[in-house]
Length: 240
Image 1 (cartoon, rainbow, N blue to C red):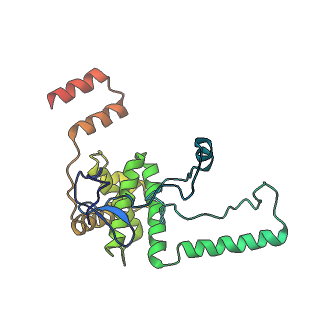
Image 2: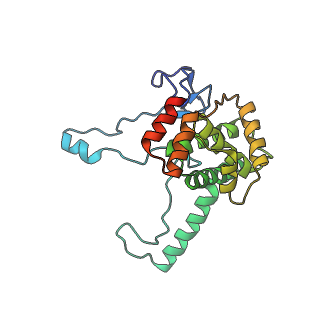
Image 3: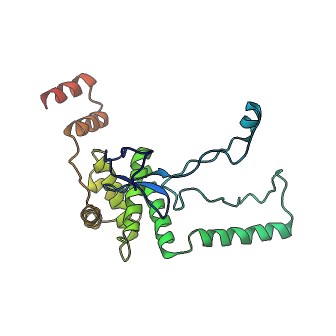
């Protein structure tokens, strides 16, 4: 089933977009990116004036691939206060504590959910350490999600697979990040060969096309680190 709403994938430019019948999500067949959900976004209520509509408009946080359930669940607060900010009674406080524990267990009840939750945390931490843009971090999360859907992560080291997903995302976006830099930022420290092995596995099994970073991107990076004047950078780019 092809999508009428999403004509082109913003990640790879492919027009092979389908709607997943199980999740009602728009998915790119070529790179596996999840573009959005096929949801009815209109209001569930009737209004008779613009002011009433403004008061009743539905809002909420946007969906994100960086949370294992995409951020659709409601989280019980740890503040131990009611809706008015008053402290809870001891008995109510104990009940709320128990509910939080059960909620956490249910949100990541399966081995797959626990794996995905852990991997997404690692991806976000590594992306932050490397100062990567949010869209690159989200692409890494999307890559890992596709690997989970294709049952590629079972029996494999989650740290290496998460780091490899980040490396793939930087390569797909043409960023001049080297494998050794990814390795140095992992905690606990992973060997470059471990990440490289996971990288090659994912690229092959996900059928990804990875290009080489543009030389100009390296020039800008080195120029920034060495405080080279803009005119020198421009001259170097002209030589290329």
